[in-house]
Image 1: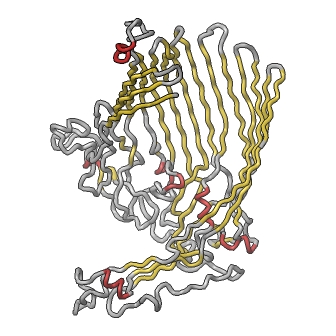
Image 2: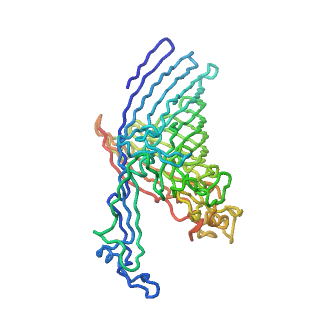
Image 3: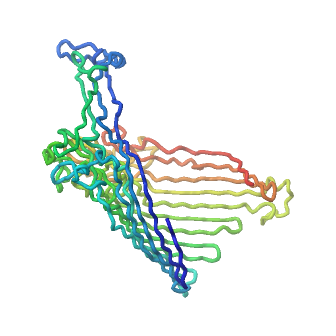
Length: 568
């Protein structure tokens, strides 16, 4: 790593580079030592008519002692793989002080983050959607890294700061740039968690008659891992993991502009706008599902037959998108005469197709991502925060009672009160429904009935009067949604319900004792959520729940603590 600074007249030029090597280890094996289920079927009495075990007559522990499982699953082979990758980054930038009023900052950064390459080349694979076959680097069918490298990650930046001569108390700042990211290394498991090097075997017994499997005899039989050669084909019935082979990196376009104004000697006001747009963000989805582009709310049986050897596929892609706009307004009084104030209000709206990234699968219809576009899971439209620090003007060296004696000052002087008051609007959530699509990795939503979400019903007005006419704490009208029928996708949008807003006041009082010139003791009394405001969590939004639409929980109540702090 190297960084150099060169100053020439009104220019300050910085340039440098960085070279990194990273090694990491992937172990995605499930049940490497086997997993066994005993349900009491073989120690139960049998129904004379059907031969089925009678309910509540067997004991799972007895089946365990007998060694008769009804379900077994375990790893075949291993996904344990060692990876390494290299990164090369270089940058150059210039801070140009054009004149006393204007400074420009501009530069370029280039980033190369090589795709991870496996030491155990026989463990990794790619998938060709055109032929429906796995591709192996050991056969020369695909590059050693599986994922293609991206060498076009140029990131220009530009910014300015302007303090106009005609308005010396005003400062204008602006900037724009492109930023590249590295896909989470967790996603590398999608090129190793598959046959032939690693798969799962799952065996089920009926629980009827004589045991089909017995410990020490035939549980989880040894399976020979087939060699990777020109004759290899993916086994029938495979549920495959696969990753996008296009290695172009996630990127963010960001831009900002702010206006700052000094108000007298101690006050500053500022308004700042920020925007961003994300492309090629992580998104997992079921890429082998009975769905068709353009058919939004219906499962189309029989579509997923183009790869007859597969029964499913979880695909790690870069199909996510995002966009955000925000405005932050701030008023500050700098600490002076024992008083400081900071107030800020943030408005924002973030929209994306997947807030969870590689964490989960929030998509509804895997062939129609437009149904996933909605406000982000973390979108808080409004947030206001006010922070106050006030040293009481009593005691030695203060405005009032400055000549107070030492003993009296121990009681009256050295007090400071503080508060942080905040309000924020609620978080957005989806209305879910049981998944009757027969598809895995789908976040099913409820159907919208057309009834107003917050309309009144049965003399209840949602979101109001929890202690009176709304004792059930209904946050919405349950009649606005219904369960989704089998083989259908829900018609309600993503994150259309906004949860309750939160008020919070953190209060504290400090008492400072000066022991020596360099030593002090501070007594602190603090109350978090000091006024004990109820901070409700979002309502139960499972349309199949008996508590659907009601508030069922809240954040912790007021917390108080006392502390002593010694400084030296």
